[in-house]
Structures are given as C-alpha cells and as structure tokens.
Length: 451
Image 1 (tube, rainbow, N blue to C red):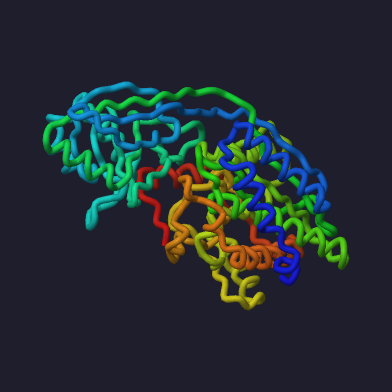
Image 2 (image 1 turned 90 degrees about the vertical axis):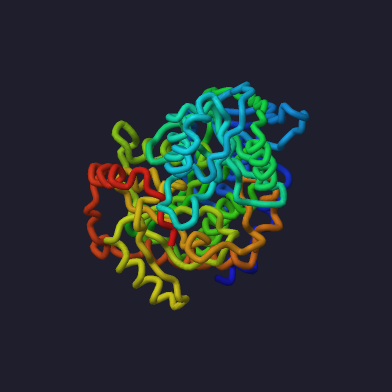
C-alpha cells in the first residue's frame, strides 16, 4: 500500500497517455504509440513474457458530419454513432419522444423516409427498452435515419453505439444514427413541430487494420501454470483524451504490475500462481481486443491454455472509489468475500443480475470463464465532476490520483492473496459456454440492471 502511494507514477502515465499521445482510437498511429509505451513500462518494471499480440481489427473512421436545417441553413452540431454508415439525406424531422412503442405507433404515418428524433434515455415510469431495440423499431417503421438526443447538457454530446454488444463481431446499425446535445435536440424538436426538414451528411468508411493487445506476466512460484488476469482497455473513442475512459484503468494495470514486481524484487515475495497483466485494444469497437485475447489463449485452435482462475477488468475507475468486485457467476462469491473480510476495508463481492456486456470482462464470461469488474460508479453513482467518458472533456483533471492509489494498493493485496490460495481452495467452475449462451438469449433485449 505504501509503494502504491509513495512510488506512484500516475501523473507520468496520465501526461503521456492523455496529453502527449491523446485520443487513442484502435488501429490509429496514436494507439501504436500507446502499446509501445505500455510494453516498455512492463519491461522496465521487470515483468516477463512481455508481448504485443496483433490481431485484425474491423475498424471504422468518419470524416465530416453535418446537420443543417433546410429552412434557414442553421447548423446543428452532431456526432455520428460509432460505425455509422455513410449517409447523405434531406428529409422531414419527426419527433418520436423516447421511442416507446406507443410513440412510434403514433408517428407511424410520418416516419417512412423521415429523420426521427429520439431521446437516448428511456421514458420515466415505463418499462425500459434498450437503445438498440428502439432504433430497430424506428427502422422497421421506415425511418431513414435517427438523431438521438444525448442526456447531457451544455452543448455536450458523446459517441454512442447503435447495436447491443451481446454478440461478438463488429457493431451493426439498424439505420444511420447521429447524436446531438440536449440543446440541439430542443431546437430540432421545435422545428419538427413546424414540419421542417433537415439535411444530414456523414462521411465514413469501414476497413481492416492491425491492432495490438499488450501482455506481460509476473511468474508464480508455486503454481506457475495457473494464472490470474488483471486487465483494462487502453484505447479511446475518436477525439477523447480518455482520462477516465480508460487511462484510469490502464495506469492501474501498469502500477499494480510495478508494485508487485518490486515486492518480489526487493522483498522476495512472489505470487503463488502467475499474475498476467493485459491492456486490451478496441474495447470501444465492440470489445474486439478482448475477444482476440480470449480466442488466442483459451479458444479452440488457440494456445490451449487453461482459463484463469479469475480475470478482473478495470474500466472508468476515475468516477468513484473502489467498493469491491462484481462477479459474473456466483460460485466464487464466498471465496472473494472472505478475502475482502480479511483485508478489513469494507469491500464487498456481488454477482451480476444479468451478464453485463459493456466492457472487456464480457468475452471471458461469454466463454464461461470467471470474470469480474470493479464495483464502481454504476452502483453508487459517479462523482458529479467526473461524468465524462466519450467526449473531448474526458481530460486528466477528471482523474483523482489519490483514489487510484487506493485502487492500486487494494488490487495488489487482493491479487497477491488470490495467487497464494491453493488450487483446492477454489470451487470448481460449473458454468459451461452453452449455459452462458442460453442465458444470454433469455436476457436478450433487456436493459442491464446496474445496481
């Protein structure tokens, strides 16, 4: 815990990742700089088997994206959704509110060929429906495109995705989608009531390019053929420096690796089983980096490794203090809670009510591998001034170094404890990939419960 505080390199990592390199869209030159930086720090920390693992990324980029009201040529700032197909369209605006079945049915006669305006959030007091389901309903009703109104105000707007990430593979769009700020949405809704039209143009292209996960290990002294995984994604969306999402998770991976390597080098305290540190590429592009990692190491035709005892995913750690772990499956809950109780810091182990597919733990759990993410902002709310992730305002000032030092110390302690639990202390994982897929089908279309 002391080394996590006194020897901290948090500010160095933040400056390099967010200020010098900046936005790190997977497959970009900036991401290549990022993976080299991470690799070099793993080497400097004394880790072994350090490698860049290349995989083909199904990527996308966009050029100019404009929206102009045809009546008076007033421009409205928009952001295309991730993987939005190219579109050039002039069509009437139709307000569908929150996109509920009732609202879509009421607007049915006006929707064919139109540009629908819909809120990102769900209608209060109604059964929630995922954004994907609501966009699919608009496409089925004949809408040519959708303008989605962001929940944020002050002219802020974020990148979003149109598809549910329940299934592996590149995200697909029911129809071309762009996001607009809350204030921009107010303007467009006023013009929709007046029967006005919008000219929408998005330039974009799809391509395949190499991307890289970064992997390193601290070998175990007693059971070197078994391992734990600590990982987090190093990429960002377009134009976002990614202080919170996810330099916070990346630098905690780097710092936990450094602290545990120093513990071994200076005090002779080695982990019992191997601890593997991974930073994933392309989390923002449907988790393709984590899928590639799981396929390479644990999949059929891969390296044939036994799965990790537990894979812990770190994402958006700057939004709140560490509260514990959320496990995918319940059989590890008593074991993890015992470790937390012995640590004496009030940390809690919980189990997902639904299989959350929002980040890089998901490819592991989809394969039936025990995985967890940190009990972060989803469960108690964000720090109000850290409500940034997919936007240019996600800068280094959104990160609280003091809190990240706690994350680093707690995770180093937890991983060391877990590494020394003998194999017989671990309950057998009863979950099969077939059972996971069946459960996912039952949960398809549900809004993920996050508390």
